[in-house]
Image (tube, rainbow, N blue to C red; front, side, top):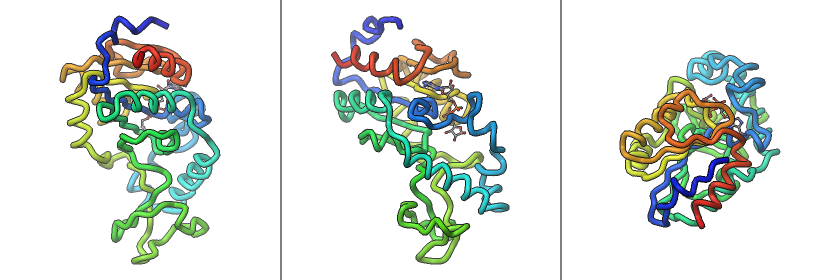
Length: 243
Ligand code: APR
């Protein structure tokens, strides 16, 4: 691995760093990514389980998919890459922000505090009638389609589906366009608008860094690319950065 100290000799506690993570950061925790060989979208059609139309036409199938993923997410733990980001946040405090596309909640379990889950969180659901939000652990998941205890409307997973607006885009835009360093970890750079944040950061004057097993689709916007496993590379980099 290249030594990053030349790139980061100016990193101080005052440097504003925004990190974007994707499924690859949780791969070493045992969660399948979407588009790698054997990934989730090899076994399921996006159109059947991850669109508002799918929920409209077959809510039981959609719920079964997310109940399964929720169950699995409770059996896994954060890996060294998640914890490295907690260390980076401890160092930078309010100058750190994490944006994740992941819904597995592992950054929260690891202890990251300044976080935006732009695609939602598997552990939550909300009512499509009254918008009330619930933790899945408070809901009777034995129901084929869980029902809102307040209004009897259908509950749906609090996950952003294809064709829906990701959460907190205004705040994300501000954070990314004002940071000094933008770091992407474990994402294929295919799904927008998340994939476009690299370009936004670069055009706004940030240095961009990528850590990924394969070269992502938007690698052209990455200034410094580190190819390999996040759980092996990120802890080493963070150690260099926070010296
Ligand atoms: N370390 C680093 N990168 C890894 C690792 C690893 N251990 N394992 C896999 N990767 C990389 C892969 O090379 C791939 O480029 O992680 C990336 C995962 O890409 P995707 O499966 O496309 O996941 P992601 O980019 O998060 O998907 C974006 O698409 O399906 C939707 O809403 C879903 O949030 C998701 C979005």
